[in-house]
Image (tube, rainbow, N blue to C red; front, side, top):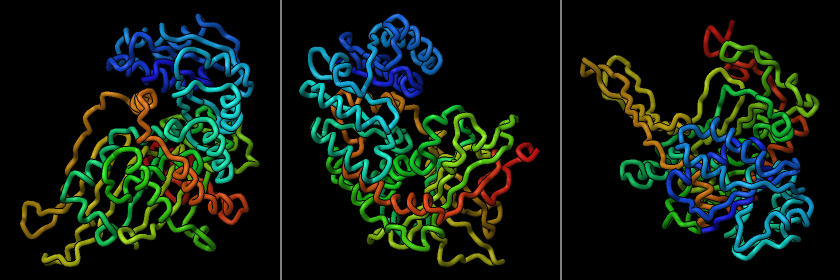
Length: 461
Protein backbone atom coordinates (compact mmCIF):
# COMPACT_ATOMS: atom_id res chain seq x y z
CA UNK A 1 0.00 0.00 0.00
CA UNK A 2 1.32 3.42 -0.96
CA UNK A 3 1.75 5.69 2.06
CA UNK A 4 2.32 9.03 0.29
CA UNK A 5 -0.39 11.00 -1.54
CA UNK A 6 0.45 14.15 -3.50
CA UNK A 7 -2.49 16.40 -4.40
CA UNK A 8 -1.87 18.96 -7.13
CA UNK A 9 -4.55 21.61 -6.77
CA UNK A 10 -4.58 20.94 -3.03
CA UNK A 11 -6.47 24.08 -1.94
CA UNK A 12 -9.32 23.70 -4.41
CA UNK A 13 -12.91 22.69 -3.75
CA UNK A 14 -12.35 19.05 -4.69
CA UNK A 15 -9.58 18.66 -2.14
CA UNK A 16 -11.33 20.47 0.71
CA UNK A 17 -14.81 19.04 0.14
CA UNK A 18 -14.02 15.45 -0.82
CA UNK A 19 -10.39 14.28 -0.76
CA UNK A 20 -9.44 15.37 2.77
CA UNK A 21 -12.75 14.06 4.23
CA UNK A 22 -12.13 10.83 2.30
CA UNK A 23 -8.76 10.50 4.02
CA UNK A 24 -10.41 11.17 7.39
CA UNK A 25 -12.82 8.30 6.73
CA UNK A 26 -9.87 6.00 5.94
CA UNK A 27 -8.17 6.99 9.19
CA UNK A 28 -11.39 6.35 11.12
CA UNK A 29 -11.65 2.90 9.51
CA UNK A 30 -8.06 2.05 10.42
CA UNK A 31 -6.96 1.90 6.80
CA UNK A 32 -4.07 4.38 7.01
CA UNK A 33 -0.94 3.80 9.07
CA UNK A 34 1.24 6.18 11.03
CA UNK A 35 3.63 6.53 8.10
CA UNK A 36 1.00 7.94 5.77
CA UNK A 37 1.65 11.46 4.49
CA UNK A 38 -0.35 13.83 2.26
CA UNK A 39 1.49 16.52 0.33
CA UNK A 40 -0.58 19.47 -0.87
CA UNK A 41 0.81 21.39 -3.82
CA UNK A 42 -0.33 24.39 -5.84
CA UNK A 43 0.91 27.79 -6.98
CA UNK A 44 -0.27 29.69 -3.89
CA UNK A 45 3.02 30.13 -2.09
CA UNK A 46 1.71 29.22 1.38
CA UNK A 47 3.48 27.21 4.11
CA UNK A 48 2.82 24.07 6.16
CA UNK A 49 1.12 25.89 9.03
CA UNK A 50 -1.27 27.72 6.71
CA UNK A 51 -2.16 24.55 4.80
CA UNK A 52 -2.77 22.56 7.98
CA UNK A 53 -5.09 25.24 9.28
CA UNK A 54 -6.89 25.35 5.93
CA UNK A 55 -7.23 21.56 5.98
CA UNK A 56 -8.52 21.61 9.57
CA UNK A 57 -11.17 24.18 8.66
CA UNK A 58 -12.34 22.16 5.67
CA UNK A 59 -12.44 18.94 7.67
CA UNK A 60 -14.49 20.59 10.43
CA UNK A 61 -16.90 21.82 7.76
CA UNK A 62 -17.16 18.77 5.51
CA UNK A 63 -16.12 15.81 7.68
CA UNK A 64 -17.78 16.57 11.00
CA UNK A 65 -19.35 13.10 11.11
CA UNK A 66 -15.93 11.49 11.39
CA UNK A 67 -14.11 11.37 14.77
CA UNK A 68 -12.02 14.36 15.75
CA UNK A 69 -8.90 12.21 16.13
CA UNK A 70 -9.28 10.98 12.53
CA UNK A 71 -9.55 14.56 11.28
CA UNK A 72 -6.55 15.56 13.38
CA UNK A 73 -4.53 12.66 11.97
CA UNK A 74 -5.08 13.97 8.44
CA UNK A 75 -3.99 17.47 9.48
CA UNK A 76 -0.90 16.16 11.26
CA UNK A 77 0.04 14.11 8.18
CA UNK A 78 -0.20 17.11 5.85
CA UNK A 79 2.49 19.37 4.47
CA UNK A 80 2.57 21.97 1.69
CA UNK A 81 4.77 22.59 -1.32
CA UNK A 82 4.53 25.52 -3.70
CA UNK A 83 4.67 24.18 -7.25
CA UNK A 84 3.67 24.96 -10.82
CA UNK A 85 2.38 21.67 -12.21
CA UNK A 86 3.55 22.65 -15.70
CA UNK A 87 7.17 23.01 -14.47
CA UNK A 88 9.02 19.64 -14.36
CA UNK A 89 11.54 20.96 -11.82
CA UNK A 90 8.77 22.02 -9.44
CA UNK A 91 6.98 18.69 -9.90
CA UNK A 92 10.20 16.75 -9.29
CA UNK A 93 10.71 18.53 -5.98
CA UNK A 94 7.18 17.67 -4.85
CA UNK A 95 7.23 13.97 -5.71
CA UNK A 96 10.78 13.41 -4.45
CA UNK A 97 11.02 10.95 -1.60
CA UNK A 98 11.44 7.30 -0.75
CA UNK A 99 9.22 4.74 -2.44
CA UNK A 100 6.27 5.12 -4.81
CA UNK A 101 3.77 7.96 -4.64
CA UNK A 102 0.12 8.38 -5.59
CA UNK A 103 -0.36 11.63 -7.53
CA UNK A 104 -3.87 13.08 -7.59
CA UNK A 105 -4.49 15.72 -10.27
CA UNK A 106 -7.26 17.75 -8.63
CA UNK A 107 -6.98 20.21 -11.50
CA UNK A 108 -9.05 21.57 -14.40
CA UNK A 109 -8.99 18.98 -17.22
CA UNK A 110 -7.30 21.47 -19.55
CA UNK A 111 -4.17 21.15 -17.37
CA UNK A 112 -3.98 17.35 -17.53
CA UNK A 113 -1.72 17.09 -20.62
CA UNK A 114 0.81 19.61 -19.25
CA UNK A 115 0.73 17.97 -15.80
CA UNK A 116 1.28 14.49 -17.22
CA UNK A 117 4.11 15.79 -19.41
CA UNK A 118 5.76 17.36 -16.33
CA UNK A 119 5.39 14.14 -14.35
CA UNK A 120 7.02 12.24 -17.19
CA UNK A 121 9.93 14.67 -17.31
CA UNK A 122 10.26 14.66 -13.51
CA UNK A 123 10.37 10.86 -13.34
CA UNK A 124 7.84 9.10 -11.15
CA UNK A 125 9.30 6.48 -8.78
CA UNK A 126 8.62 2.88 -9.79
CA UNK A 127 5.26 1.59 -8.57
CA UNK A 128 3.67 5.06 -8.48
CA UNK A 129 0.07 5.76 -9.51
CA UNK A 130 -1.64 8.74 -11.07
CA UNK A 131 -5.25 9.82 -10.55
CA UNK A 132 -7.31 12.00 -12.89
CA UNK A 133 -10.78 13.38 -12.22
CA UNK A 134 -13.47 13.53 -14.89
CA UNK A 135 -13.99 14.70 -17.54
CA UNK A 136 -11.13 12.80 -19.16
CA UNK A 137 -10.17 15.10 -22.02
CA UNK A 138 -12.45 17.60 -23.71
CA UNK A 139 -13.30 15.50 -26.77
CA UNK A 140 -12.29 12.24 -28.46
CA UNK A 141 -9.05 13.65 -29.88
CA UNK A 142 -7.80 15.02 -26.56
CA UNK A 143 -8.76 11.80 -24.77
CA UNK A 144 -6.73 9.73 -27.25
CA UNK A 145 -3.74 12.06 -26.86
CA UNK A 146 -3.97 12.03 -23.07
CA UNK A 147 -4.07 8.22 -23.09
CA UNK A 148 -0.92 8.22 -25.21
CA UNK A 149 0.87 10.51 -22.74
CA UNK A 150 -0.17 8.35 -19.79
CA UNK A 151 0.95 5.17 -21.54
CA UNK A 152 4.45 6.68 -21.78
CA UNK A 153 4.42 7.48 -18.05
CA UNK A 154 3.02 4.48 -16.17
CA UNK A 155 1.36 1.11 -16.94
CA UNK A 156 -2.39 1.21 -17.60
CA UNK A 157 -3.03 -0.54 -14.25
CA UNK A 158 -1.43 2.44 -12.51
CA UNK A 159 -3.76 5.00 -14.14
CA UNK A 160 -6.91 5.79 -12.15
CA UNK A 161 -9.48 7.72 -14.19
CA UNK A 162 -11.84 8.05 -11.28
CA UNK A 163 -15.59 8.59 -11.20
CA UNK A 164 -16.95 8.72 -7.66
CA UNK A 165 -20.38 7.59 -8.88
CA UNK A 166 -18.97 4.07 -9.24
CA UNK A 167 -18.24 3.94 -5.50
CA UNK A 168 -21.73 4.97 -4.37
CA UNK A 169 -23.70 2.37 -2.40
CA UNK A 170 -26.70 2.28 -4.74
CA UNK A 171 -24.53 2.12 -7.83
CA UNK A 172 -22.83 -0.93 -6.38
CA UNK A 173 -26.27 -2.28 -5.56
CA UNK A 174 -27.22 -2.14 -9.23
CA UNK A 175 -24.89 -5.05 -9.81
CA UNK A 176 -25.91 -6.84 -6.63
CA UNK A 177 -29.63 -6.58 -7.43
CA UNK A 178 -29.13 -7.85 -10.96
CA UNK A 179 -26.59 -10.58 -10.49
CA UNK A 180 -27.42 -12.02 -7.06
CA UNK A 181 -31.19 -12.37 -7.52
CA UNK A 182 -32.64 -14.97 -9.83
CA UNK A 183 -35.92 -13.07 -9.99
CA UNK A 184 -34.38 -10.13 -11.89
CA UNK A 185 -31.70 -11.31 -14.31
CA UNK A 186 -34.04 -13.51 -16.46
CA UNK A 187 -36.25 -10.46 -17.16
CA UNK A 188 -33.39 -7.95 -17.46
CA UNK A 189 -33.80 -7.45 -21.22
CA UNK A 190 -35.83 -5.68 -23.89
CA UNK A 191 -38.56 -8.31 -23.84
CA UNK A 192 -39.61 -7.06 -20.41
CA UNK A 193 -38.03 -3.58 -20.08
CA UNK A 194 -39.26 -0.74 -22.30
CA UNK A 195 -37.16 2.14 -21.02
CA UNK A 196 -34.40 2.98 -18.55
CA UNK A 197 -34.07 6.54 -17.25
CA UNK A 198 -30.73 7.58 -15.78
CA UNK A 199 -31.34 10.98 -14.22
CA UNK A 200 -29.35 13.45 -12.13
CA UNK A 201 -31.59 16.51 -11.78
CA UNK A 202 -30.66 18.89 -8.98
CA UNK A 203 -31.96 22.05 -7.36
CA UNK A 204 -28.36 23.26 -7.09
CA UNK A 205 -27.63 26.19 -9.42
CA UNK A 206 -24.18 27.34 -10.52
CA UNK A 207 -23.13 28.26 -6.94
CA UNK A 208 -19.95 30.09 -7.93
CA UNK A 209 -18.48 27.34 -10.13
CA UNK A 210 -18.47 29.31 -13.39
CA UNK A 211 -14.71 28.99 -13.71
CA UNK A 212 -15.10 25.27 -14.29
CA UNK A 213 -18.67 24.74 -15.40
CA UNK A 214 -19.00 27.40 -18.10
CA UNK A 215 -16.27 25.73 -20.13
CA UNK A 216 -17.81 22.28 -19.75
CA UNK A 217 -21.61 22.23 -19.48
CA UNK A 218 -24.01 19.50 -18.46
CA UNK A 219 -23.23 17.10 -21.31
CA UNK A 220 -19.52 16.85 -20.54
CA UNK A 221 -19.85 17.35 -16.77
CA UNK A 222 -22.46 14.63 -16.17
CA UNK A 223 -23.56 12.57 -19.17
CA UNK A 224 -20.16 11.84 -20.75
CA UNK A 225 -18.84 10.23 -17.59
CA UNK A 226 -21.21 9.71 -14.64
CA UNK A 227 -24.37 8.77 -16.51
CA UNK A 228 -22.66 6.70 -19.19
CA UNK A 229 -20.95 4.77 -16.40
CA UNK A 230 -24.36 4.03 -14.88
CA UNK A 231 -25.58 2.95 -18.32
CA UNK A 232 -22.73 0.44 -18.45
CA UNK A 233 -23.66 -1.11 -15.10
CA UNK A 234 -27.34 -1.31 -16.00
CA UNK A 235 -26.85 -2.79 -19.46
CA UNK A 236 -23.69 -4.91 -19.33
CA UNK A 237 -23.67 -8.69 -19.60
CA UNK A 238 -22.92 -10.56 -16.35
CA UNK A 239 -19.13 -10.59 -15.91
CA UNK A 240 -17.22 -13.74 -14.97
CA UNK A 241 -15.94 -11.88 -11.90
CA UNK A 242 -15.73 -8.34 -10.56
CA UNK A 243 -11.99 -8.05 -11.03
CA UNK A 244 -10.65 -5.23 -13.17
CA UNK A 245 -10.38 -7.09 -16.48
CA UNK A 246 -13.77 -8.80 -16.47
CA UNK A 247 -15.72 -5.79 -15.19
CA UNK A 248 -14.05 -3.31 -17.52
CA UNK A 249 -14.41 -5.59 -20.56
CA UNK A 250 -18.16 -5.88 -20.07
CA UNK A 251 -18.51 -2.11 -19.64
CA UNK A 252 -16.61 -1.46 -22.87
CA UNK A 253 -18.87 -3.96 -24.67
CA UNK A 254 -21.87 -1.81 -23.74
CA UNK A 255 -20.29 1.43 -24.96
CA UNK A 256 -19.24 -0.18 -28.24
CA UNK A 257 -22.84 -1.36 -28.75
CA UNK A 258 -24.44 2.08 -28.36
CA UNK A 259 -25.89 3.14 -31.71
CA UNK A 260 -24.31 6.41 -32.90
CA UNK A 261 -26.73 9.31 -33.28
CA UNK A 262 -26.76 10.68 -36.81
CA UNK A 263 -28.82 12.95 -39.05
CA UNK A 264 -32.27 13.86 -37.82
CA UNK A 265 -31.85 11.68 -34.71
CA UNK A 266 -29.56 14.36 -33.29
CA UNK A 267 -32.47 16.80 -33.30
CA UNK A 268 -35.12 14.32 -32.17
CA UNK A 269 -33.17 12.46 -29.51
CA UNK A 270 -31.07 15.15 -27.86
CA UNK A 271 -32.01 18.28 -25.96
CA UNK A 272 -30.06 21.15 -24.45
CA UNK A 273 -31.24 24.09 -22.37
CA UNK A 274 -30.12 26.60 -19.76
CA UNK A 275 -31.99 28.19 -16.90
CA UNK A 276 -33.36 31.70 -16.73
CA UNK A 277 -34.08 33.70 -13.57
CA UNK A 278 -36.47 32.13 -11.07
CA UNK A 279 -37.00 31.05 -7.48
CA UNK A 280 -35.26 28.13 -5.76
CA UNK A 281 -35.95 27.27 -2.15
CA UNK A 282 -37.51 30.66 -1.48
CA UNK A 283 -34.62 32.64 -2.93
CA UNK A 284 -34.22 34.47 -6.20
CA UNK A 285 -31.75 32.92 -8.63
CA UNK A 286 -30.34 34.94 -11.53
CA UNK A 287 -30.37 33.58 -15.06
CA UNK A 288 -27.38 31.40 -15.87
CA UNK A 289 -26.25 33.89 -18.50
CA UNK A 290 -26.15 36.58 -15.79
CA UNK A 291 -24.19 34.52 -13.24
CA UNK A 292 -20.79 35.95 -12.30
CA UNK A 293 -18.01 34.53 -14.48
CA UNK A 294 -20.32 33.21 -17.22
CA UNK A 295 -19.74 34.10 -20.87
CA UNK A 296 -23.25 34.07 -22.39
CA UNK A 297 -21.85 33.82 -25.93
CA UNK A 298 -20.59 30.31 -25.21
CA UNK A 299 -24.15 29.04 -24.99
CA UNK A 300 -23.23 26.59 -22.24
CA UNK A 301 -26.12 24.27 -21.42
CA UNK A 302 -27.22 23.59 -17.83
CA UNK A 303 -29.54 20.76 -18.87
CA UNK A 304 -28.68 17.96 -21.27
CA UNK A 305 -30.79 15.00 -22.36
CA UNK A 306 -29.85 12.20 -24.74
CA UNK A 307 -31.90 9.20 -25.84
CA UNK A 308 -29.77 6.19 -26.75
CA UNK A 309 -30.30 2.65 -28.03
CA UNK A 310 -28.04 -0.36 -27.69
CA UNK A 311 -27.57 -2.62 -30.69
CA UNK A 312 -27.24 -6.06 -29.15
CA UNK A 313 -29.43 -9.08 -28.53
CA UNK A 314 -30.35 -8.20 -24.94
CA UNK A 315 -31.39 -4.58 -25.42
CA UNK A 316 -32.68 -4.13 -28.98
CA UNK A 317 -35.88 -2.08 -28.65
CA UNK A 318 -35.23 -0.60 -25.19
CA UNK A 319 -34.76 3.15 -24.85
CA UNK A 320 -32.08 4.52 -22.53
CA UNK A 321 -32.73 8.14 -21.57
CA UNK A 322 -29.89 10.06 -19.89
CA UNK A 323 -30.63 13.47 -18.41
CA UNK A 324 -29.02 15.95 -16.06
CA UNK A 325 -30.03 19.49 -15.20
CA UNK A 326 -29.29 22.26 -12.74
CA UNK A 327 -31.56 24.73 -10.91
CA UNK A 328 -34.63 22.52 -11.23
CA UNK A 329 -37.62 22.59 -8.89
CA UNK A 330 -36.92 19.24 -7.24
CA UNK A 331 -34.01 16.86 -6.91
CA UNK A 332 -34.38 13.67 -8.87
CA UNK A 333 -31.32 11.43 -8.81
CA UNK A 334 -32.08 7.88 -9.80
CA UNK A 335 -31.97 5.01 -12.23
CA UNK A 336 -35.58 4.15 -13.12
CA UNK A 337 -36.24 0.84 -14.88
CA UNK A 338 -39.64 0.81 -16.62
CA UNK A 339 -41.06 -2.63 -17.31
CA UNK A 340 -43.53 -3.32 -20.10
CA UNK A 341 -47.23 -3.68 -19.33
CA UNK A 342 -48.69 -7.14 -18.79
CA UNK A 343 -50.29 -8.54 -21.96
CA UNK A 344 -53.68 -9.23 -20.37
CA UNK A 345 -55.57 -8.32 -17.21
CA UNK A 346 -58.33 -10.72 -16.03
CA UNK A 347 -60.17 -7.90 -14.26
CA UNK A 348 -63.46 -6.40 -15.31
CA UNK A 349 -64.46 -2.78 -15.48
CA UNK A 350 -61.72 -1.69 -17.86
CA UNK A 351 -59.04 -1.69 -15.14
CA UNK A 352 -55.55 -0.71 -16.24
CA UNK A 353 -52.42 -1.53 -14.28
CA UNK A 354 -49.47 0.83 -14.58
CA UNK A 355 -46.27 -0.88 -15.69
CA UNK A 356 -43.93 -2.01 -12.92
CA UNK A 357 -41.13 0.38 -12.03
CA UNK A 358 -37.86 -0.38 -10.24
CA UNK A 359 -36.09 2.69 -8.87
CA UNK A 360 -32.49 2.83 -7.68
CA UNK A 361 -32.32 6.12 -5.76
CA UNK A 362 -28.85 7.68 -5.94
CA UNK A 363 -29.31 10.52 -3.44
CA UNK A 364 -30.78 9.55 -1.05
CA UNK A 365 -29.69 5.98 -1.63
CA UNK A 366 -32.65 3.62 -1.63
CA UNK A 367 -34.37 0.95 -3.69
CA UNK A 368 -38.09 1.06 -4.54
CA UNK A 369 -40.23 -1.41 -6.48
CA UNK A 370 -43.62 -0.17 -7.70
CA UNK A 371 -46.08 -3.03 -8.23
CA UNK A 372 -49.83 -3.47 -8.64
CA UNK A 373 -51.98 -5.67 -6.42
CA UNK A 374 -55.54 -5.73 -5.18
CA UNK A 375 -57.03 -3.56 -2.50
CA UNK A 376 -59.85 -4.20 -0.04
CA UNK A 377 -61.93 -5.58 -2.91
CA UNK A 378 -60.21 -8.47 -4.64
CA UNK A 379 -61.40 -7.38 -8.09
CA UNK A 380 -60.05 -3.83 -7.78
CA UNK A 381 -56.44 -2.98 -8.51
CA UNK A 382 -54.32 -0.97 -6.08
CA UNK A 383 -50.70 0.26 -6.20
CA UNK A 384 -48.10 -1.43 -4.00
CA UNK A 385 -44.73 0.04 -3.12
CA UNK A 386 -41.81 -1.85 -1.62
CA UNK A 387 -38.92 0.29 -0.39
CA UNK A 388 -35.55 -0.62 1.05
CA UNK A 389 -33.07 1.84 2.52
CA UNK A 390 -29.41 1.16 1.86
CA UNK A 391 -27.18 0.50 4.87
CA UNK A 392 -24.80 3.41 5.41
CA UNK A 393 -21.46 2.55 3.78
CA UNK A 394 -18.36 2.12 5.92
CA UNK A 395 -16.59 4.57 3.60
CA UNK A 396 -17.93 7.48 1.55
CA UNK A 397 -17.44 7.35 -2.21
CA UNK A 398 -14.16 9.28 -2.17
CA UNK A 399 -12.88 7.24 0.74
CA UNK A 400 -13.46 4.08 -1.29
CA UNK A 401 -11.80 5.57 -4.36
CA UNK A 402 -8.75 6.73 -2.41
CA UNK A 403 -8.41 3.33 -0.78
CA UNK A 404 -8.48 1.69 -4.23
CA UNK A 405 -5.76 4.07 -5.41
CA UNK A 406 -3.50 3.49 -2.41
CA UNK A 407 -3.94 -0.29 -2.49
CA UNK A 408 -3.73 -0.53 -6.28
CA UNK A 409 -7.20 -1.87 -7.12
CA UNK A 410 -8.28 -0.30 -10.46
CA UNK A 411 -11.59 -2.19 -10.86
CA UNK A 412 -13.71 0.92 -10.27
CA UNK A 413 -11.56 3.25 -12.35
CA UNK A 414 -12.10 3.77 -16.07
CA UNK A 415 -9.85 2.09 -18.62
CA UNK A 416 -8.37 4.13 -21.46
CA UNK A 417 -10.42 2.57 -24.26
CA UNK A 418 -13.54 2.97 -22.12
CA UNK A 419 -12.97 6.73 -21.88
CA UNK A 420 -12.49 6.94 -25.63
CA UNK A 421 -15.66 4.97 -26.37
CA UNK A 422 -17.67 7.34 -24.17
CA UNK A 423 -16.42 10.28 -26.22
CA UNK A 424 -17.22 8.41 -29.46
CA UNK A 425 -20.87 8.19 -28.40
CA UNK A 426 -21.23 11.89 -27.65
CA UNK A 427 -18.96 13.42 -30.31
CA UNK A 428 -21.82 13.68 -32.88
CA UNK A 429 -23.98 15.34 -30.20
CA UNK A 430 -21.27 17.90 -29.40
CA UNK A 431 -20.83 18.65 -33.09
CA UNK A 432 -24.56 19.08 -33.65
CA UNK A 433 -24.90 21.36 -30.66
CA UNK A 434 -21.90 23.53 -31.54
CA UNK A 435 -23.21 23.96 -35.10
CA UNK A 436 -26.63 25.09 -33.87
CA UNK A 437 -28.44 22.07 -35.31
CA UNK A 438 -30.10 21.59 -31.91
CA UNK A 439 -31.50 24.85 -30.45
CA UNK A 440 -30.55 25.99 -26.95
CA UNK A 441 -33.86 26.05 -25.09
CA UNK A 442 -34.59 27.86 -21.84
CA UNK A 443 -36.33 26.91 -18.61
CA UNK A 444 -37.08 28.93 -15.53
CA UNK A 445 -35.03 28.18 -12.41
CA UNK A 446 -37.29 26.24 -10.05
CA UNK A 447 -39.33 24.67 -12.86
CA UNK A 448 -39.31 21.08 -14.08
CA UNK A 449 -37.19 21.92 -17.10
CA UNK A 450 -37.90 23.11 -20.66
CA UNK A 451 -41.55 22.73 -21.52
CA UNK A 452 -42.41 21.56 -18.00
CA UNK A 453 -44.26 23.51 -15.28
CA UNK A 454 -42.89 24.48 -11.90
CA UNK A 455 -43.15 21.77 -9.25
CA UNK A 456 -44.94 23.72 -6.59
CA UNK A 457 -46.96 26.83 -5.97
CA UNK A 458 -44.03 28.28 -4.05
CA UNK A 459 -41.83 27.86 -7.10
CA UNK A 460 -44.39 29.66 -9.25
CA UNK A 461 -44.63 32.65 -6.89
